[in-house]
Amino acid sequence: MKTLKSILFLALLALPFKNLLAHALWIETPLNGKIGQVQQVNIFYGEYATQEKEAPAKWYSDVNQFSLWLIKPGKEKIKLQVKETENGFTTSFTPTVQGQYALSVVHEAKELGGTTKYEFSSYAIVNVGNIKAQADVPNLLKTVFKSHKVHQINQEVEFQVLLNNNAFAKGKVMIFSPEGWSKECIADENGYITFKPVWKGFYVLEASNYEKTNGTHHGKTYDASWQGATSGIFIH
Image (cartoon, rainbow, N blue to C red; front, side, top):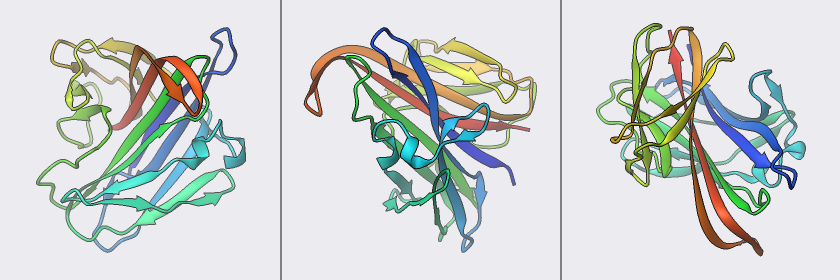
């Protein structure tokens, strides 16, 4: 069974002169599940490219205090309790009906990056039996596929970028391949992007949105906000 990894890339201004510390928070769970069978879910933080998984005590700021939500078919939302492990967190759920389930993380880091507030979100999809409707993913910034099937190498993949449930015209998305290749794409006026994968394996799509805005966050003033959101797709 192929494993779906939903990666949340964490770009933080760790130093005052815009030096970036790139880390990732990601979810690992099988893409397909079965009624009555336990679905294992793991959450890691570290360097995805090298599979370096940090102990939760070393995670940035309060990232290890994230909340993981399960959205069941029918839109029932349940907060999953996670258990700390040596190199991350683990949890599970047992599907009870057919349909598409979604796992969702949306987390604002407590610490600012310079004077920028950061929001990180990611989701993973689990298909169980016959799919009559796509899962309701609450993340406000996301990339959405027409279907969560296994896509084929050298065949075009189309997805849409949404912001606040509307098409994100000219939205930016980074595509990361399992071979280390990456490319920045710009959505069209309707929020659509198409790409043709040339390697097999898991691809990560990271949408981002940067805005100049003012406010306070945990007692600190910020003058900009950044949203980053990832989803994944497996290429057969």
